Image 1 (tube, rainbow, N blue to C red):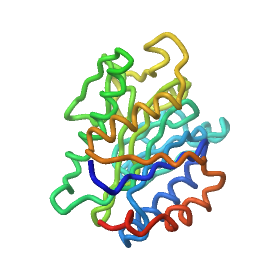
Image 2: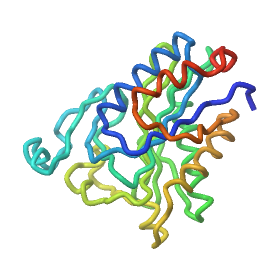
Image 3: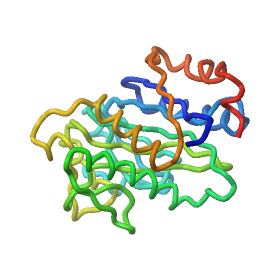
Length: 242
């Protein structure tokens, strides 16, 4: 394991736009070397997002109809097509400075996908990968979406794993632009409730193995997003060196 840990912060439930802006701030700080590599664990309020090349063609409801349901829609700077985020979904945003020889986007995505496969295996669920369609599948259904951005060697965005997620909002879109496949959750597959905190812990263990990094979970939950950057910046200087 690397001697400098990846710091993990627990954000609780966060509106998408606020978390997106925070990620951009943290990615800039990571490029400047003022914060360590960081993972943000959170849930989102209900929201639809699409990647930087996305549009509205994979929405089954109009933007006005989504608005009447109180669900915003954002075109973001990540890769990938339209997806849904909501309570009961484990979202992990990874702000990581990659080494000079590690900047292949596909390789990074493959390692993130592998972390989800590892988590599923601990529950006796067999997932699989489709090289043409990023994400993690169980049978014909997607259980985890992956969309990332890499800017000047620093990653942000990440994974969204359906744990106890309400799956009905996926009926209002063509998830990830793939009309002939479905969406599932860990709770649906197991036929029982699953604790999000338990899944998060298993995912962090898988991340540590797959990325060969120590992870350091900050036990104190983040109470306001304004605290995140100062909290990371105040960490020992040794943790910020590349």
